Figure 1 (spheres, rainbow, N blue to C red):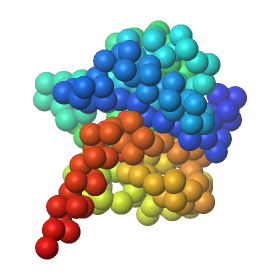
Figure 2 (cartoon, rainbow, N blue to C red; figure 1 turned 90 degrees about the vertical axis):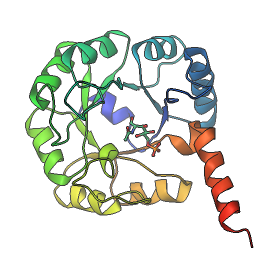
Figure 3 (cartoon, protein in one colour; figure 1 turned 60 degrees about the vertical axis):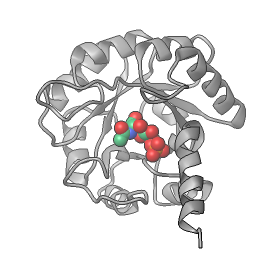
Figure 4 (cartoon, rainbow, N blue to C red; figure 1 turned 90 degrees about the horizontal axis):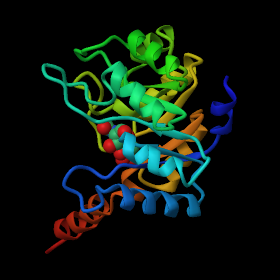
Length: 225
Ligand SMILES: CC(=O)N[C@H](C=O)[C@@H](O)[C@H](O)[C@H](O)COP(=O)(O)O
């Protein structure tokens, strides 16, 4: 395992990527959110554009996982779908580039993306939704897989909870993995570690106050007599 991945062992990686339409979708706001996450003990950051990666790179040495989110005609794959995007994210200063490694129709193969990421000097994090996708991603040169896409492909379980079953399968197959997706409480993050996750990524519960507010508002509305 590379020393960069060893640095991430047991760490909380905070995903800081306000969506289009969010009042926080602005690089300076992203930098402020990252500063707050670092103050709280984040050991890594996951960011979604080259300008965000470059701005955050300037304020911290912690490992940065970078990605793009962009749609491509005729493909449902939106996380770093092309070698050009992978190159831009690495050039902006990301240590790892996350990319979609699911079985969905894609403009470029997983091997083409891992090749481009390595050529740009970064490590390749494959966002997967099943055990089979994880195995295929490692065979195609990925350095690490993350459970990011479970619940977001039609062939993975659609659920509000994290995909702990997938984590159990990945561990049983002897595959190193990062746990990611709907790990919305410290207890769920600890459970993911106990199930063998190398590191844990938390996004919405820390950096999407609009989403967290909706959890509370919905719960209170549902409880009206
Ligand atoms: C599916 C997809 O596009 N996930 C994205 C991947 O980068 C982010 O929007 C998520 O916030 C991230 O995966 C962390 O997950 P959660 O926000 O549930 O803690």
